Image 1: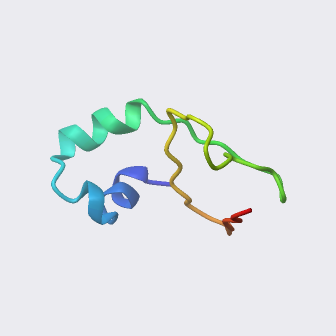
Image 2: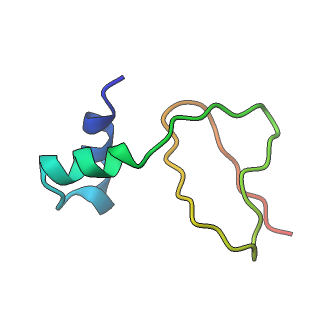
Amino acid sequence: MDFTRVIEKIPVFGDLSPYQVQQFLKGCKSRTYKVGQVLCMAGEPSNEMFILITGALSVHHP
């Protein structure tokens, strides 16, 4: 999959140059998660950002 094209379609990244997109993607990792797996919890610190490429994601608020 061409992740460059995916990133270019996301509005928050719209002002990045092609070089900046490539630099951003160098810091990214592709991951696969199992159904029901928790990615993050509200109130817990994180230094990650998730971009959903395929599948479904739900957000639950306690």
